[in-house]
Amino acid sequence: GQNIDQPTEMTATEGAIVQINCTYQTSGFNGLFWYQQHAGEAPTFLSYNVLDGLEEKGRFSSFLSRSKGYSYLLLKELQMKDSASYLCAVKDSNYQLIWGAGTKLIIKP
Amino acid sequence: ETGVTQTPRHLVMGMTNKKSLKCEQHLGHNAMYWYKQSAKKPLELMFVYNFKEQTENNSVPSRFSPECPNSSHLFLHLHTLQPEDSALYLCASSLGQENTEAFFGQGTRLTVV
Image (tube, rainbow over all chains, first blue to last red; front, side, top):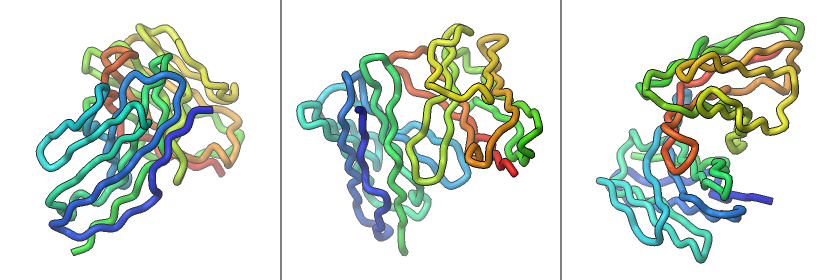
């Protein structure tokens, strides 16, 4: 079956750095997405990786290793507003998005 | 504001009621999706429409009935639901079904009593 694994919950301190990992096993691969979802709000797009390597976008970076079925989202200079759930999703060979259950990130002052 | 609007935001319905969820996007997207989001579970894809044609129906019970009258509007008709159908129902759209990001609406929080 197809599977996306990510930690259920993480805690970090304001101003610090946190890395949220995602491992996947899917039938085919057509890209990996990270979304942010604040409580009670819509998921919003953060990043897209289809080739191996690091994609940097301001305080957020996303890394992909296709051979290892692994990605991470790196958040730097954490702010209280970064408290949210972070969803990892992979497009399989049929271009269907397979989702992880999300990682709830709690930022403490 | 993502450009995808869902109504209503909250809905409480009895098991014998019939109701409809509405989704609207004016982003010029060709693909629209219905997802179910339950607490601590992955998003479950329910239906996909591409250029108004249904391309996916992931074994969803017939008590959920989608309708896509045009590429900007998507409905989810509900009837004789069960309490376990209580969840957040999210609509999303994307330019195409392939390697493009999806834009989500804020969802309808559905409670079946």
